[in-house]
Length: 194
Image (cartoon, rainbow, N blue to C red; front, side, top):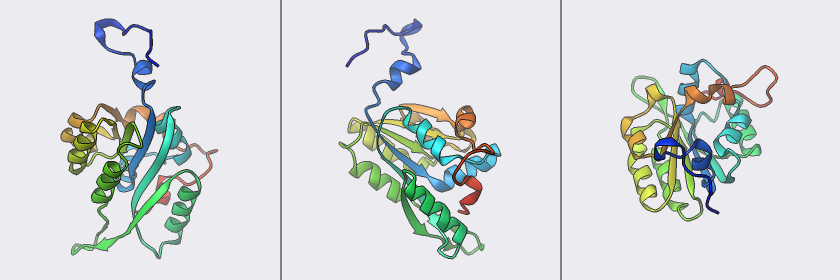
């Protein structure tokens, strides 16, 4: 149903008018990117609040959480179990040790494939990542009629990703809505160990 409310001054639509036509929403969260953004913001993420904020009252198709895992880390396994039981589809990949001793799992391909394969099932993709490697996938799904919102910390976000998105939301601007408080339930971002 089209809104009969005229656009505000300058021909731009109000945030409410933009969001009212989101349709079915699919959320794609780059767990590692979100983890490091939370460290930069010095907050713990409340994943229940995050899901509510990203959905924004729209119909949720599914929320995907992509992360590298250390199968021997019991705390991380508990976190991922909690995520699975609280509205997230967890896509995990074993961490690989790099020559410098650090560990990494790259899930860009998994995110891109899921975004593409589900086109037609959702109207709006919410991508929580600042990784410029995902710009081509974002561009591809938008050409197939999907609206794409990118949510990440500006200092960690590629300009190419912002340029191909329909809307960009800086995590700094929504930190109060998604941070864990002392009374919050569920694990916070410090429980991830990516």
